[in-house]
Amino acid sequence: MIYIFNNIRKEKNSFSTSNFTAIYQYADGSYLPNSSQPDIEKNYKINAQEYTPHKSTRYINIKLGNNGKAKKINNFGEYIECEKDLPELYYVRENCCGCTACYTICPIKAIKMRPDEEGFVYPVIDAAKCLRCYKCINVCPIRKYL
Image 1 (cartoon, rainbow, N blue to C red):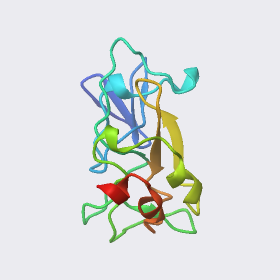
Image 2 (image 1 turned 90 degrees about the vertical axis):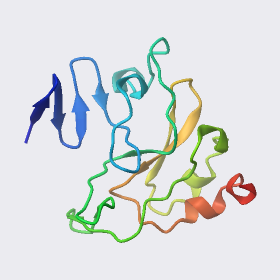
Image 3 (image 1 turned 180 degrees about the horizontal axis):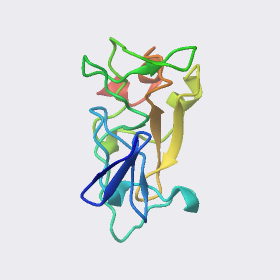
């Protein structure tokens, strides 16, 4: 189903205009501003002249359940309610060094390392795949000191 609101097209859990496709979201399901969305055709590069730095962990594929928490996909490919919150790897960008420890330990590869608006790599969590095992949080070298 396609919705059109203020010249923005919503389709398949992303926003799209003629210039970009919004895929990055915050934990509450809201999309990052257009200036923080990557150009997928240009290897996830972002227009540096218009960028707005992301604030905290970025996510993709968030579909909120009735309980307000992101749903996950079961073994049959169906979205199901989930009682656990998504892992918040960092609350401010300065608390992530881009070491890829979270990416490496994720048992189902729900974390991808993608460049931000300034070219530094940060983790992006696929909310639909995430098991909420929190191994990514436990392995983080910076979170131990926060």
